Image (cartoon, rainbow, N blue to C red; front, side, top):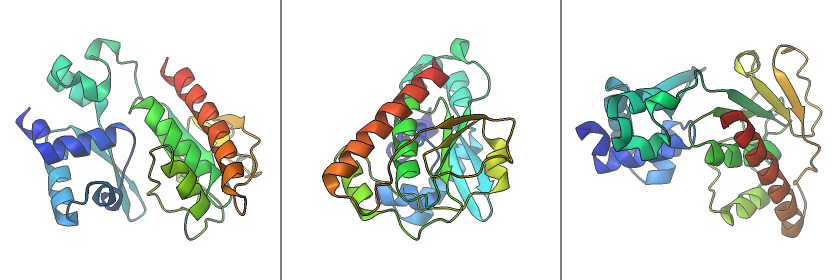
Length: 219
């Protein structure tokens, strides 16, 4: 309890509740120094409140909802939204794909993570990732209170192998190498180069799809 309720650590836990984050993403969202964020994460990991996954040289941290619920019961129930008795096994893993990973898949992941509140794990990637997220997409998402902080990343075989659900955002990504996963296709227009009103419409369609998927997987 002492470790978790430290103001800065509790803030980190609340951010991790909404999905995996890198140290750089947490620094951006909290304005804390990188070495301070790393220190708090080490403490949270030492007390089994936070888990970490390695992607190449990048580490991603997430709230360990099972450990939090088991250790604190109802005291920290607002972090997990549930108690030990309601645990239902491993969290489903969802991968959102589009070629550039700079628009549709980034929006879908953000809405999905906000909806599942740590009860599922999301990620996004593309076969030919862009250097940055489209600025018009950032603007549209900021209107919904979401700051897109992930950089576009390249799709890997590990991501495909680990996913329980793979969502093709309408870019025609080849996911045939992961035949065992459930596949979903959302036919959505590309926001790149479109006016902000058009991007808002795409954003809202993606939000509806992502939130419906979140409800299905966490019911």
